[in-house]
Image (cartoon, rainbow, N blue to C red; front, top):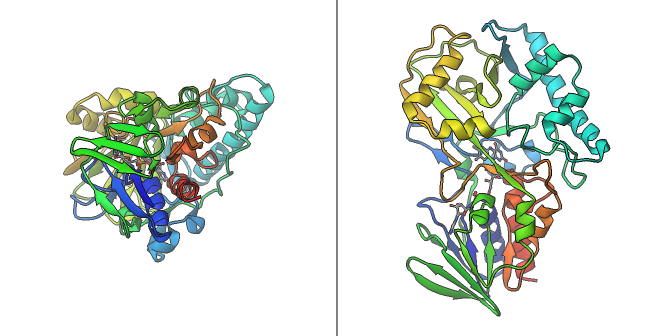
Length: 404
Ligand SMILES: Cc1cc2nc3c(=O)[nH]c(=O)nc-3n(C[C@H](O)[C@H](O)[C@H](O)COP(=O)(O)OP(=O)(O)OC[C@H]3O[C@@H](n4cnc5c(N)ncnc54)[C@H](O)[C@@H]3O)c2cc1C
């Protein structure tokens, strides 16, 4: 069987590998000049730096864990040094207590939200369970890894989602991209698919021509799928409504490499509670994670969208201003790297989410095959969307569906 795969991210490569193992002839079309998609390991500083996914979220249970040969570094979201709004470091035991409270409060908030029986944002659900106003401010500001805008996220528990094991995050030390493989497939880089014509078989149209296949596995990121940039002829039945029930959020990284570290050793993260939510208030200590004098700041949700529009210079300045109350010795960094996943044309956002008025069953509906087309990608794996493992398992599923 002659099968095309659209996209060489975690989902596309998992699908391609499985199809090749089962004896199919596989061609992967990738719009970028590199594989990996939202796995993007940069080496321009002379060591691997993750600009997209950084963690194997399920630790040794992750489908990529065996490929890392054990060369990973554990990272603990509760090993966090908090700075109060005046820039004073908070006592270590209190930091752990607050970080652990934050982790447990997400679960409690979602369960409380589910009982309410009406659409709620995660912020509204938090308001039902957070203990005292002062703590709420701290927890809200310091949400250890701000993954999304809590106003944009549904505040209800999805019974179809996996409960992730806490504190299992591992960072692959030699680079996430070393865990990817293109074995057994023919790879066409810098070849964006523009039109998918489908009927009894599939025709893909790219700037270099049009190509026929028996079947295709499509792994379009949700932001790109929703944008309509890839045309389906005829239109896909049953997908438009599902696409409208999910959202796309943004997470960006600001990587600052300094001449030497000016921060205390021993923490995985720093959280600056003076910062407004999502606005460069959380930093990963690269000294501990990668042995480099690097801080990696996170911007998420609405704050990330605003920041992304600014020039690099202003973004670096914003990060330094955020750091200065806690670290008065901070100087202009030697090297910087800033991501803009929202305006990246082949991603158009960081990952999927269920909005307050959304419906998590849309993940399953996006996964339903249509004729010779099979669908994969993080936004088609309800059990663990927005993750590499979710993308990987969705790719395996689509490949198995395609070969029956
Ligand atoms: C900043 C950031 C941090 C993250 N951190 C983590 C983390 O620590 N751990 C974790 O598990 N997950 C993390 N994620 C999420 C994770 O990266 C994604 O869920 C996963 O990589 C998605 O894989 P995918 O194959 O579904 O999509 P993608 O990786 O986006 O692959 C889709 C591919 O399709 C290509 N494409 C798009 N349009 C076309 C076209 N028209 N024609 C051909 N090709 C096209 C794209 O270039 C891309 O290569 C993070 C994401 C971001 C953005």
